[in-house]
Length: 205
Image 1: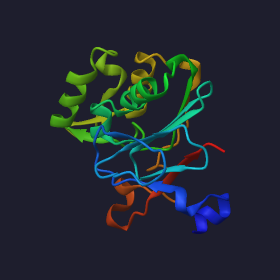
Image 2 (image 1 turned 135 degrees about the vertical axis):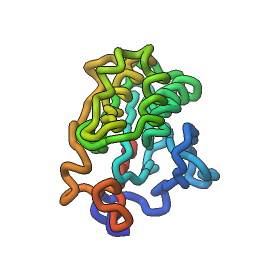
Image 3 (image 1 turned 90 degrees about the horizontal axis):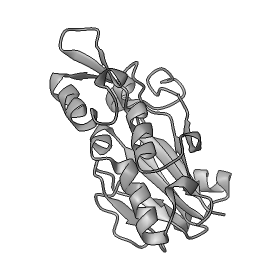
């Protein structure tokens, strides 16, 4: 209610999904849809607030300025591996006839490569999945300890959006790391169970 009052949004059309690190995208027409296991929301209806929650995962806003369609995507590392950003664009193409060249994408605050440190098993998943997009050294760096690696998921998401047809100049990176800015933005990696959630909201007026 506080958020809706501050931003002049209709609380009855404020959509929250049951996020579960999937690749699933839902089309929102009136807000009564079943949103279990949904990590991406897309609509062409005005007055509906598409909202998702984050605490290190990557928020991706999508806006087709020609067809007047919006999307809100929750891309954790598992969602990134499943290419959920591309799935959101695909849904806009299939449902509304969007041309990727008309879509603007904004990648919001998320854990940066400076802090997203993973073990060998996760590193290998990223290497096997995305080596075709770019040389692994572009998105994988040696960690501080043996068997640890830093992964740049923001770079990967940007390349995935380019792959599906978005113009490079239409992809905006916030370049804000949630861990580096833990005093201003919630970060599960930094705060653990004490972490709150950041909320991303996009609406057509």
